[in-house]
Length: 345
Image (cartoon, rainbow, N blue to C red; front, side, top):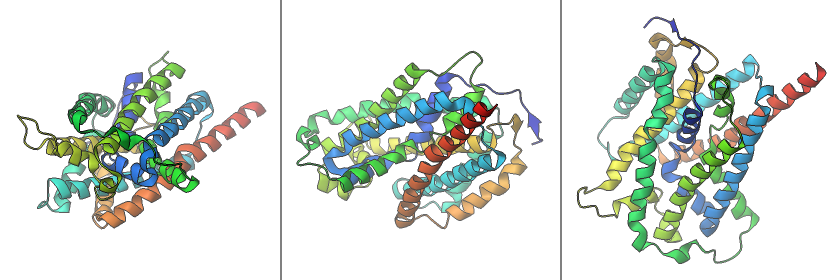
């Protein structure tokens, strides 16, 4: 494919918020509940809501300070390396879970090859193709929550009430694990310049988005808490899938497998969105297949050496620490510097 240019692409508010929804919840969703609940027990759900409120405040900082966000070429490169690291971490998780649940006999390289083909195809297409992918996933989220309500009669409501107080160590651990749902939120800063002309993101938009996002993820945590005991959750890392597996639906024998396939699709889309941030933000040039093959091949080769439960856990914790730097600290420093320079002029 020859190197081509496209007109400066634009994005609607709906596309931005669906982009952020899929980007942040995608790969981490399948065991977010396990991590947050194991860290803070029955306190998990209200701690998570508290972190979501902080998340919303950071978004407000983004939209208020966006005009001061002018990263240097080196800083943009740092963000690109960070997003590449996230792609690597998420690929290890996708392949591990895919082989655990549905593709037990499929070699790792075959799964990575399939993902790579889809990844390259999406990024060499028009920007609107990638921007519309998250919107197409919207019905799945509604279907997932609706399916969880099938377990309503089996829920134990006393499970959500804390048996005692919460200490600082427990609160810190629960807050830290909750951060996995907000990885990639800095994407808003890079997408806003391409927002449709005369359209602005305001407080109301952030409140609506965060209300939907918080409700979706908090419900998944609540259903896990209400369906399983704390002892059961400690030994079931993919508790939500086991919850779905236990539900009887007359026309589907294994509803959990349907959702595993959908989650894999959801996660691949989130990886593509990170690829979009790496190769398409701040440019009108469509990358060529030749340009993408080497970095994609390199990431896939490295990924193939880290597909185990222990290594994924180490990578996940490392991802949380780096996300604090790139989602909060670095954007804040860049905006503070931009504000300082604007005063000087």
